[in-house]
Image (cartoon, rainbow over all chains, first blue to last red):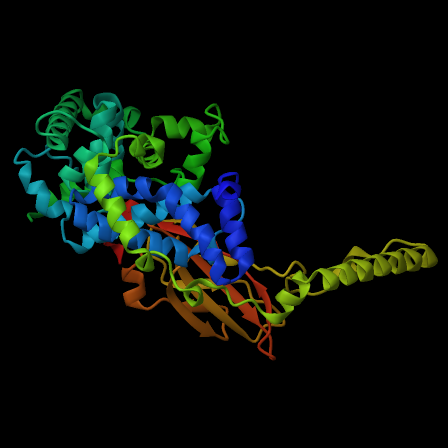
Length: 205
Length: 252
């Protein structure tokens, strides 16, 4: 085992690939597993918040990773590759549990104001609204609020997962940051509207 | 959900989601390790982009930062994993790459040495012939065909490539002269096959169920291999990355 300690993850993968199915090559996988088991277990626990579900998820992540090793490209970093698998597999798992934003967003009774322009049916109008919001986000939200909003509205992670992933220690966790971010965005939008529509073109990217 | 709330979600996703300038996880890793300088345009984008910053933080947390916070629950999970190695390590048949005989042959040391020797002989012969004719070879003569000539064993995938605003309806590539059929594959980042098709054309339509599985922000790979009449692979695109942008969510 001492010999393997001196090898990088990528070298272990390379040796496993070169062994071409030799059963003895499983020791290279075992070493990769030994090095990354805690990392994957911690990630899966942060996502699920439950030991048994996290163990199932972690098993799937490793199995998928090892099954996909033949396509691992030279020059890639194993940890980044493993992270991609863990991330995608976790998001799939959460989606399959139907814990989508649409369900949890009902927890925020206060809306973020009316961002519609004339016709929200138009793609251009939607893009303009998103551009304006992006601008106001940069000006109004702090780092943690930004992270929480991305994880909740884009990656569709449930609030408790976000709280664990970001290590938030306040009482209501991610929810407090979303409420605060939504309030700030609403206020910033009202200010922007009251400052006159002539400034819109200068303001938005 | 009301229409207004749905519109609100849509705007929030578009505002916080990835744009065309956003980096892939592999590129973000390079930013973290200093492979991409913060002073470049890419570095500046990452500094001001909520999405890239968040992805980068998640990537960091997957590393030692997350590991350091492993509590008793994580130890329990690790114990469960260690108790079931058969569920983690695939059987050799599940992972071994089927290597064609010619690839095996070229990896044999003796054959490789012989190939090197042969290459040296050809090089000397070419040099002698060039001296004998006394003039440079015509560039036009090498490129007389209207069709693109692929001497490197690879050809281009036309679409889907990079970040997309809409789910791809088809996969299209540049035709290879000597090819009579093509094998097309869509792969997930871990290499698992999502879809496969064969065709004689230079494009293939993506079935609706496959398109539905191309979800925003999920990186996928496409690969096309070209085969000649004796079913030998003559060329390939290699793995080409693409991803559906977040604001293309409802366009399936």
